[in-house]
Amino acid sequence: MFDIIQEIIGELKRNKLRTIATGFAVTSGLFLLIVLQGAGNGLIHSFTANMGDFAFDAIRIYGGMTTKPFQGIKEGRAINLDDRDVNMSKRSFPNQVSDVMPTLQQSGLNVSFGDNYISASLYGVYSDFQGLEAIKILQGRFINNIDIDQTRKVIVIDNSSADDLFKNHENPIGQNLKVGNISYKVVGVFKANEMQNQNDFYIPYSTLGIIYNRGRYIDELAMKIKNIPTDSAMNLFMDDYIRASSYIHTFDPTDKRALWIRNQAGDNIQMNKAMDILKNAFFILGLLTLVSGIVGVSNIMLISVKERTREFGIRRAIGARPWSIIRMVILESVIITSIFGYIGMLLGIFFCEWMDKAVGGQTMDLGVFQTKYFIDPTVDLSICIQATIVIIIAGALAGFFPARKAVKVKPVEALNG
Image (cartoon, rainbow, N blue to C red; front, side):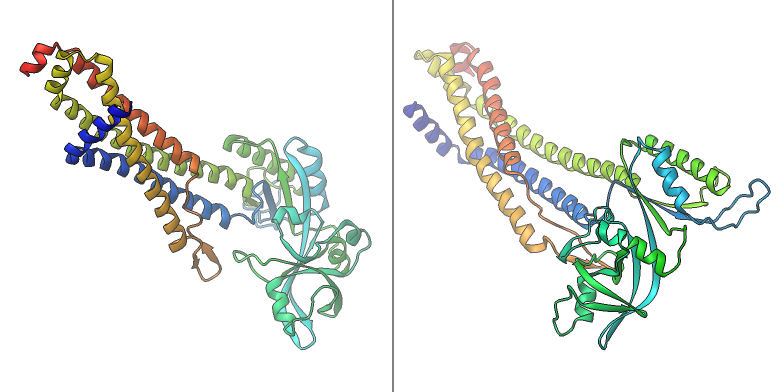
């Protein structure tokens, strides 16, 4: 085996141009495959990170305005949600709705601490609301069930507002904020979401309802849904829900404007489709690139074997077995694809790391919020190794088939060729 390898190395040195051409096809194929996969992953990761604070299994319902007359009632009537919607959502859709969370809102309030003040909105929420919005608590805690049961005057604020109100670096937890003329104790500080409005504070649902005399009415109804995997199932559920709501509020069940619906769960289905298309597109592009490298290797090996037909005839004439010739060609192909495949893999990984350091995690300022447009453009090492193994196997086959055909030629014919 050692002699064979030495002979192969000598053959490669004698045919440097052919060796370089074969190596370039292998290296470029793997390099482009890894770079394309890395770039695709960077876009996908950025999209996922920018949407990370949204609940993808949620549907939010708001009261709308009727656009069709119904049962003698003219169009243009405002629909106000109330506690009947909460009960209906739980009772009528047990297989599609896992949780129902009403929310109250009070906007345009002055919030002050000492001489510092800001304008803010209060949201009356239940404890489960934290999971719905993926609220990240930095200090203290979120609203809990005891706060709601005891109608406590406690508040959870965002860290950006905390910096504005507590400019002397006081610990916000345990401090009392004045919201209008009412004092609230700060029990938690959460991470501000750059993609949403700031100065949105949370207090217990029961507290806001009593202080601002909201009665049975609610501003928003959030539902966590389940068992709705497709667009058709989602559309059927929404039609059924609007029909059930029309019985409560007496509007035309075909009036799509009577309720304003923010369907994050439906958007998630569409987003997953788009992500799958993007992944498949980059995979196909990478696969085509790899195939082009394999085709290049095959063509070069075919030419190489054809040029060496006379050499193979001489080897056969002096007693060399056909398998020894085939084995030599296969080993030659494997050595070339292994060395240059490894080089292509390393170059692709290094380029992805360079992309990550150069542009990874950078933000784009869109005025209202900032968004990251390229995050972690890297490829899993197992994919790189698998692609390298594939091209090595392809290189071995590219050497095997033309070599097998060449050794079938009779030695006399090969010598005359």
